[in-house]
Length: 121
Image (cartoon, rainbow, N blue to C red; front, side, top):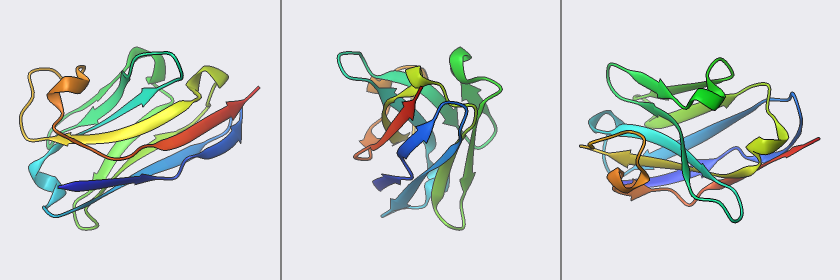
């Protein structure tokens, strides 16, 4: 499967963005979909994950971000509200058919190219 992330941009603190991850090559419904982010000089960190039956969130985004998927459009989404300056990073979508832990980026086999999110203070 190929993944294409989009929707990033520059937004003031407190603002919102919706990221999209369009999949091609295979139906998205086969995969668990995750969002990770990586800021300059920092490790890639888990943001959110969605499977057929569950959604998981990093503690620092609970109540502000929402992950969803549209299997007809073959696209996953990350709605980000109340953005904070520390949320500035490149956001990546990822997919995998099996994983040991949704927290670990190494467990995701397929990755998009990422989209930059910059939150101004």
